[in-house]
Length: 83
Image 1 (tube, one colour):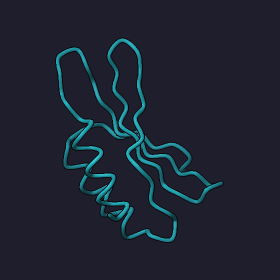
Image 2 (spheres, one colour):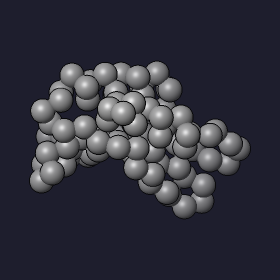
Image 3 (cartoon, helix red, strand yellow):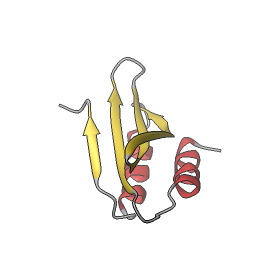
Image 4 (tube, helix red, strand yellow):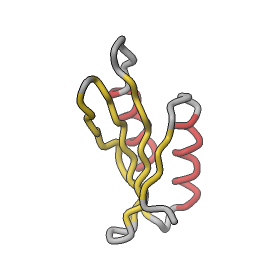
């Protein structure tokens, strides 16, 4: 299973809209491990970050494809580590 398929499968498994919860997609550019890391943040009184997976810097097309598909969810996105 590719990184893209893992990330999208994890998103489908973890994203369950329920009353009192809000969700945000978090994309972190990790310069040390040279990966783009994807998280689903669930806010229900407290914030829980659930890792969806990562894509290496070498796979820029895969990163763009994953991000494009996740954006169709309509969730707000926060980017960290991008300058």
